[in-house]
Image (cartoon, rainbow, N blue to C red; front, side):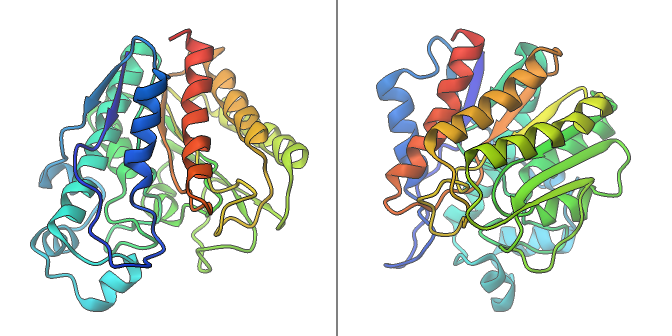
Length: 299
């Protein structure tokens, strides 16, 4: 089996910036130190090229981002300053989604230690998301005939407006988003099924809502599922507003992963958001997702 990571340095951000870019290196360090993925290979993702990015994005936006000519208001919407490192990481994250999708189809499970950039739209980035990794990967697989139907199960606490804007009208895609009702983005684009949860929702209510929401996804009969796990429903998350425990998040992961493994549907994982204080809580939640993977697939 193979899992992937963006082999690019952390983003050069100004002091006090609220995006915790170091969490990715911290996650990889935990994965390596504890050998969480067992005998599976952890592989550097090949960055996506311009033509691959154009599957989901306009030429004008792609070229402006690659060349560093995005207008100032466009970069403010993303919430990150332009840098070559930002471009390189974003391309590598899309490459990780493409690679993990192909590996999942071969082995049944894969994923990357990054990804889930679900706020990026066709013509602009938003919410710390530059290029939409899952939209690019989904359209690549669908348009080349590798699969005929796929699903995105998005349990990041923030609604995946970019996924819905790019893919929502496509009958080949089912987009489930289980999200905080009163959270970013405040202008939402409806997906196939959006499940809104009240502030403070705890483990039991969350898991019941998720179990019910997975039923129509199963009925859609996807040939591949992208699982955007997200660490931000965690109670300690600064931007989440829900109140899940680490145990609850692991139960969430197990529910999603076992639902599709028992039906022989391949799964590709993207880790989504995580903004806990301290950030080590988010890193633990991310690592726990892969611990559940290792348990279910006996890695």
